Amino acid sequence: MKLLEGKVVLVTGAARGIGKSIAIACANAGAAVAFTDIARDDNFVALENELKSIGVKAMGFVSNAADLNSSSQTVDEVVAEFERIDVLVNNAGITRDTLLMRMTEEQWDLVINVNLKSVFNLTKAVQKTMLKQRSGSIINMSSVVGVSGNAGQANYSASKAGIIGFTKSMARELGPRNIRCNAIAPGFIETEMTKAIPEEARKEWAEKIPLKRAGQPEDVANLVIFLGSDMSSYISGQVINVCGAMLT
Image 1 (cartoon, helix red, strand yellow):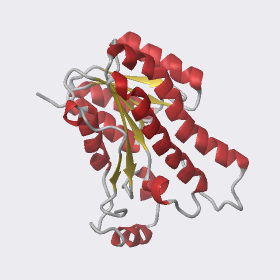
Image 2 (image 1 turned 30 degrees about the vertical axis):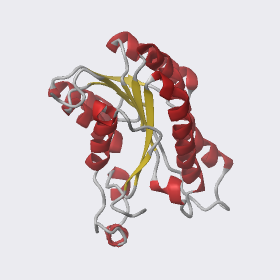
Image 3 (image 1 turned 45 degrees about the vertical axis):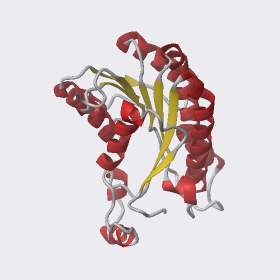
Image 4 (image 1 turned 120 degrees about the vertical axis):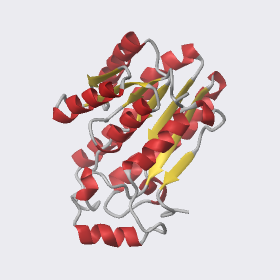
């Protein structure tokens, strides 16, 4: 039996990057997959088609994770279509990196809203369904910079650190109803965004990682499968780094 057989997974911000790998991995693990992104573009349609080709029920939903009303409406639509939600992966996120002296209020607010408020929005929206089910796994995408901080990323680091605090609080709050909540903190993962960095800089970063390489989106997706499955039924309130020992 596949690890997520019979489960319904909702992944936010999934049209590309780590979110896309998570959605595909969940489908390959037997889950029905609902995913969201901000626009129905070519990437959105391609992912929806790829998921369906795996042979599972799959559907994309255009949704703004940073908006509570949009998030609530989307969750209602997912439940109406799939009848339940077993796993929520809060993956939506952006960066607006710059030194604090140059950072605008708009850059601060945008990153906090998309990265952190979205986690509040979706978790609040999905908890009603999970409370009725008396089961669920919520997986929040943090970052190693939410643990360690990073110059030039005050907004991003703050949003990802906030996710860690939120995760630990929800694990305590929802645990009595058999709902688990964990956070994943990826390190240097090769995505479309990091591939835009000059190759020499990427090699330099990789050399500082004890495993001497960048991670792949699948490395994060594999952990999502485990945390979403019944194999992790006694794991909650944890922050798990996927960073090649960049942080120890």
